[in-house]
Image (cartoon, rainbow, N blue to C red; front, top):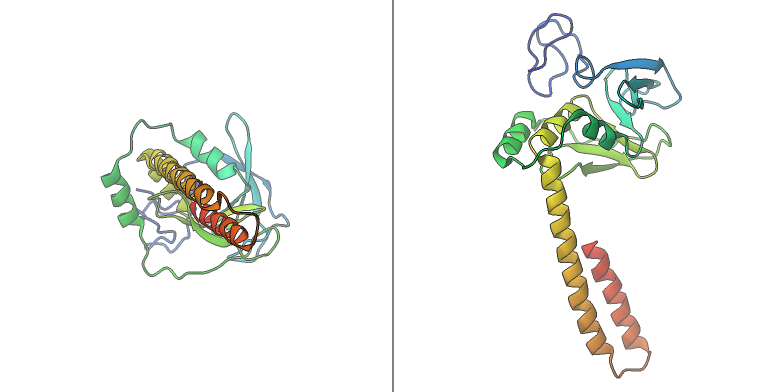
Length: 220
């Protein structure tokens, strides 16, 4: 269990503000990652607080530079950086533990948390909300062009998810989904070829092609 950096009181899961001294804590980096601030206030803005984000370097074999809000402690990752942090912080596991994954999500679930769409710190366009990985329980805000935003505590949640085999389970489910999509595409292609045989190019063939494109898109 994390502890308050000021008074050392225990912090419950997904709790940032100490109920004893009232101090807001950085529960993702402080005491967990060796980091240093390389830019105290850049041009990228925190989507929660509206202030300039710090650039921090996580000290490892190769420095990983990410953005951090000094007020709410949210983190912004350029494409590929979050995966690099997870891979560098948690060793690969051989199997997944479903009961543990369920317990982690149950402990960290926040029913009172309001749904809020945030602007990308770079382009200021509203980001998409998406679940990060199967059974992770973590909804991140993603800009297709510039990266993902995680609120304070969500990185710790993902690290626990990976330790419990969540990333391994996600890859298994992704492979199964791709296999089902491939089977469906092959079956539809066979039916489409049979239905199209003997016909000249025309309106009916174009309709079938349009249907095929839609079905294939659904399975991607």
